[in-house]
Image 1 (cartoon, rainbow, N blue to C red):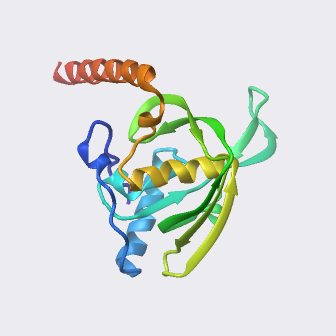
Image 2 (tube, one colour):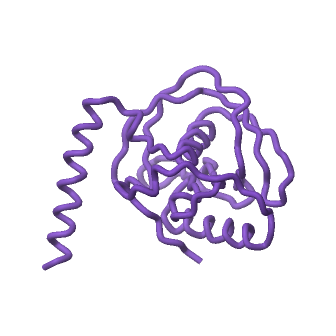
Image 3 (cartoon, rainbow, N blue to C red):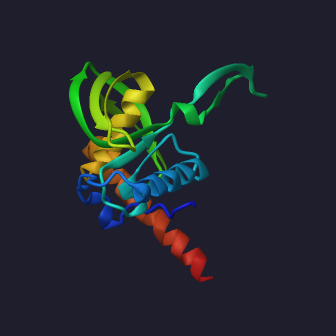
Length: 186
């Protein structure tokens, strides 16, 4: 079932999520719904708080690059469910290096900006069955995990874009919301 994604400036996005305690059928159903939601919104990651559930659970599904080219001559990227990471109660063990990556967010639609993140990470977490896992990642996977982890801590990527860019974003975003409200009232 596809769930509703809450968007900025919803205050619930700034809540710190609570640890998952029960690794049961309710959690499994929720993770399945979260996956359906992420796919329906064309995301590569999503956190539980983005569907208004403040628990420390997130999904990451990085596309694989195929050898086929699209009509623009670019490699086609596809997502495969076997690559899905279900990350519960994560804790960073290591954050190393630095990289800048253009990020977007399902909860901040139609906005993309460069954000500085660690280049490689090591993470301890639990899977849907409560089994502890250790994961090392770099590149886009590391960026996505850090982005989703920030959601669990009650932070959005727009908090990392610098004062001037943030002021411009806030002004433009408020104008966009006002415009959308005016259109929906007509």
